[in-house]
Length: 430
Figure 1 (tube, rainbow, N blue to C red):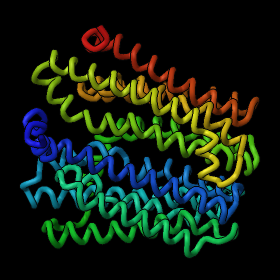
Figure 2 (cartoon, one colour):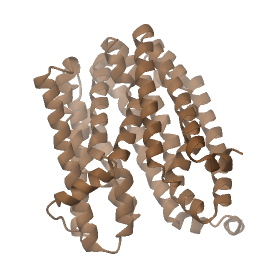
Figure 3 (cartoon, one colour):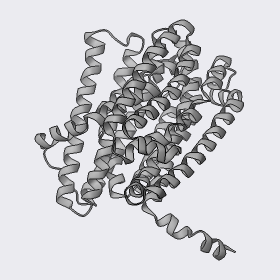
Figure 4 (cartoon, helix red, strand yellow):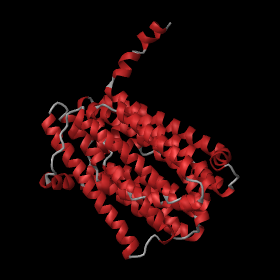
């Protein structure tokens, strides 16, 4: 029976495919992050309370925003450089050295910015201590070699390392976080264990893969920064649009409301990873088909798109129906306000899936400038509309702003594509 199935579906070849392996290991990384996040939420809420949980997440939102600066588009550009130099140890050593050096410089710049904001301008008043202890996450991001292993097509090790890091973080919460006064250590523990595992990975890269670490070549670093400017600003705009809601809400609401909204938002943002993961997995094969056989590319993308929309609808519908149970499990209490936020935001995964086709079209056609324009138009809309609605209606207004942003960005991308590359729109949608 198994042999007949294997003849119809060549499972061995499927598993050995490098792109499939990369997708599976990326899925493992994201799944482990999701699982640990889900497990840690009720533990943290019970230990530090909803108020401090909201402030911890607010500090984490600021750090994640600055991590876009630390990453500076290298998550998209560096894997390609590594892939082209897989067999050139000397060239690879220079690329690795320069990328890590650039990210460390950017991490110090981001940390300096936080300290200026806290000690010089008096910003982040409610959660200054938590934010200071969260700075270690910047250096965890700077030393994360995910881009290297993606380019080398060796994702197994970093997948295992990521799971181990998250398990250590979870153990840290259980053993060291027991009351609201200890909330400052939550993000610190995440950064400490992440940085420690990353340093072990760097040792492996140097000792076993024979990659040398050279002094930074500042001319090469400067060139790479200039080349990545559009990618950086596109990533920054997208991140603000998707994850900036909690920061906006902090200007208009108390800590308790932040905690309620944060709980619902974290669940939704986890589910929203689905379309992003699909784009990462499909992009390499889609690029190849687009270059070699446009008709096959459009057929392939249409099949993917329809399936993504169907699964996205199931995710959103299931989240809406299960919202009371999800909040009950995560918080171990009935937080009706969080349930309401989650039910409203449950449409986000499906609405985000609407734009999967447009994003893939932009990526395969190398329309970086178009992606940059779309990202910042979306960001501008989100900040203005969400800030206005939040000031009037609080968390409910922010939820409505987030939903409308997903619809608007789909329309923005569609219009921009139609104006600049009408053939792509006709090939895919008609």
